[in-house]
Amino acid sequence: MPRAVDGTKHKDRRKKILKQAKGHRGRRSTNYRVAKDSVEKAGQHAYVGRKLRKRDFRRLWIVRINAAVQAEGLNYSQFMHGMKLANIEVNRKALSNMAIEDKAAFKTLVDQVKVALAK
Image (tube, rainbow, N blue to C red; front, side, top):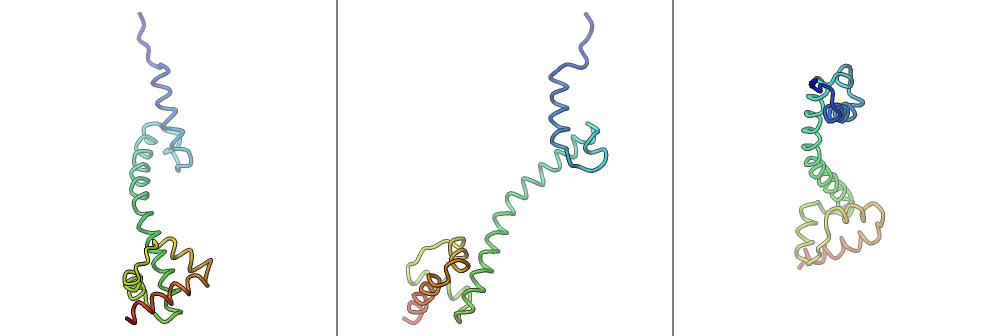
């Protein structure tokens, strides 16, 4: 009985890797042996990127909150300390969004924080 060299499982595995390597440069997108390494490395970068995205967004929200609060005469750390003193629990994402879209509500929040800091 002849040996099966190019079975469907083998072909499917190669097709899957080459499909994932679409858009890679040069032989990385067409040559299975090179594409395999490229896809593996891309997967590692994607994994790390998913962790970094959380950090990056938190930093962005903090910068936005700081900019909005400085217009009111406070800085970020004072504002967050005042939020704790006033027992206001709003996450940074919501605060950032509020500072951009609903300036009036954000201003009332800042006023409450100023009162809590004054005590």
